[in-house]
Image (cartoon, rainbow, N blue to C red; front, side):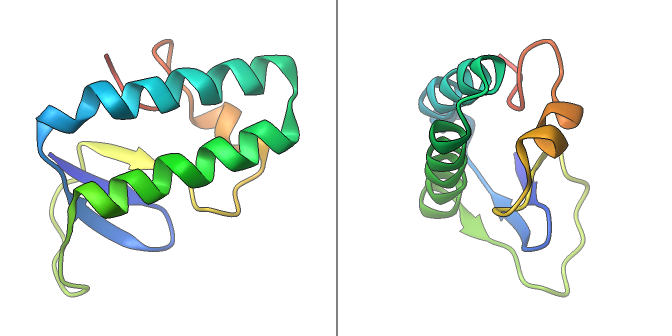
Length: 92
């Protein structure tokens, strides 16, 4: 699966990593619902770092269709809230 991190680029990620990423996504959703800004910031950073670590960055000149778009590292809680689906950022 191709994942885009807004403002950074694309990462090719194996589907086998999604259970771990979904745990972080669930934490992020709970922190957003409770308004926990510090927890939100920490979990968003952990989620993006996990995608970067588990995946392989595509070249900057490559433009593949992204199946999943994640917010930029500096996105606000409100900006991420607007990106959410019923399942969170990462579909189950």
